Length: 570
Image 1 (cartoon, rainbow, N blue to C red):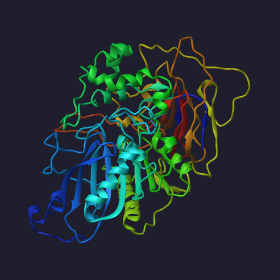
Image 2 (image 1 turned 45 degrees about the horizontal axis):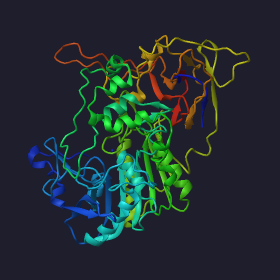
Image 3 (image 1 turned 30 degrees about the vertical axis):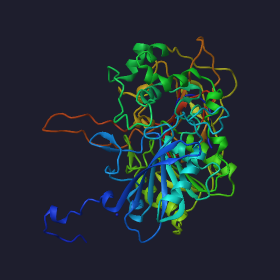
């Protein structure tokens, strides 16, 4: 295979017995949370008098005490039933724990509406600033709210063992991180997963100083403020684009003023400030939780996905900050071949056309996540206590390290050369350059197919569509003579000029498969009709990493085999 890039220098760093019973007779009864747990709902008072809605699921087996496992969320602690959101003790989800193992083992599961959202009182804040000297009435601090919640639970929920764990994915991942600052001593384990950490610095809002329009427009059109406490909205109202092609939607409206004009005032309320604050000012700096991750007493397991299009940087920043500021605790990191939250329920065996050869999601849940909480909340011995678990794509194996980036990694540089070449050797002298004409009215799309929002597959998508455009510069290596493993930050460095007033440069690191690479799934045929054509995997151009270049970097763990090539694109 080959590797490909899109712009400049790269820093590397499971004997059957015959049975004759019917399926109905042999099928095991479906596991029921209602049969094993009793649900309670509380309004827990905070130190300022604000009450937070909290649902608590307690094991019916009272023969032993159990630890708490908490999730704090802005997306509702209610239950989805018949396509709508419901509150009340009669409504149970199918599952409440991060996996069936937790529910079988026995935990007191707690799910809480954070301050200002749904059935909780108070005023919600975007990425609650940890330090806020001008805190308005009803506004809070997540660490304080967690402390008061834990204190109340320990005193008012019977049969607990005095230990608390917390976890969450995405925004609940942020609340996990923010909740363990100056942590309550009963909190023994925490797992911020895909945690929103610094919205401006390569998480949801901005990458390399460029606003992530498609993702943020789609999210904030549905995620809106509401008068609280309220059980509404029962459903998220999706935005009506009037088309199935987001690329054409944005091209039609062209300017941010026109684009925002397609939204209601309620839909714009949370989105507009993120656009107006286009530089890294106090608005963003005060919401960066990383510098405040101190005085943490719990063991922490931070989790992220290599192909997370929403919060790719958050897990790495969170892990590093916790390790740096809390040297006497366990700060672990897990990075797998997953999309945003892809490790939570899915197999994790493939993404789009790319296969990872094993069920990485199941492995994480059973061999890493469950033992971590069992160890710290129940005292169960855990043999898997290495600091870093990183799935190495390409070779498709799990690696363990003492730290991240791995200490054995060495910095290497790839250079763009004349005639679209790419090599480890710096080109000889001169000030040669390549140029192209970019038309802002016909920008390079990020997928080869129509889509709304940001499809999860695009992070490993085939880049052949972009390589044929005249406004894309491509640089490609010779077939690799030896295996190469990229492990650590990828940092493009460009020297550019433009005749325009401003520009965004998108740089892509691409793995070009060999011309004799076997094809994937056969063409689908039904009823003798011609079906969907299969995508040829020979010469497939897999996106490994790609992002805006200005002030940006990305981290990756991937192994490229001999005969592949490296490629950069602009």
